[in-house]
Length: 258
Image 1 (cartoon, helix red, strand yellow):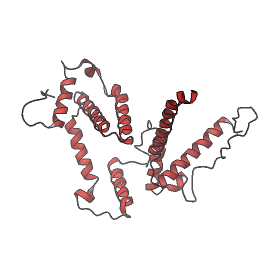
Image 2 (tube, rainbow, N blue to C red; image 1 turned 90 degrees about the vertical axis):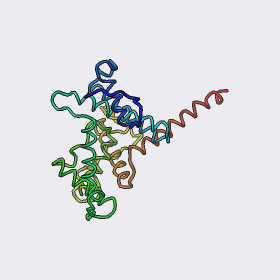
Image 3 (cartoon, one colour; image 1 turned 180 degrees about the vertical axis):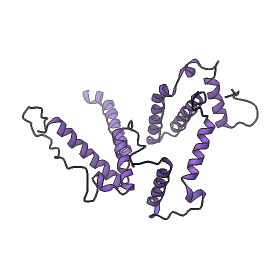
């Protein structure tokens, strides 16, 4: 990949200039730290930038959102620049962009190919069409394929339920239907006392209690999914309110003590 000099005279394409800057940083004679990085060492930064962008969006920080989008773009450019020197399967940021364009056009035939959506109505029909196209592309044998194992449990639960329901398998995840595979578990009863033999304050053995809470959380996610609510976002918003209340209480503490 030929190194380009940024800040050249004449009209500037900011995206192309960002590619040139990343190329300069990673090329010999550029930044030593950047040159030492690999796809693996950058994963932590990729996740951090994604979470920081989510926080900026949720707090309405427009300036922060603009900055964090740039930081996330940097991760894309960085990974693509590293990949361009891979001895086995190299690719560039142009290859990444070209693949993205092809995929977006292919997955939106109702926009780019004048194909009518014939299955269902509204968004449900679009989801069905999207899933059908992805199924053909990926040749997946299960609706669960492609859901990252490293994803947070709450976000993963919502993804699993969404995939199952869109595939007509809602009963398999505790929804309406005669063949539910999620077995009922004893309800969690706070305040009950166990016999001291590996039991918890609820009176249930630790493993049973863990399973009970797990199914209660899964049921909350299922209800959120049915109501069109993203459970991960809902929890983050609620947690933000708690954090704000804590900060406010900490600010009032000296006055109360006085």
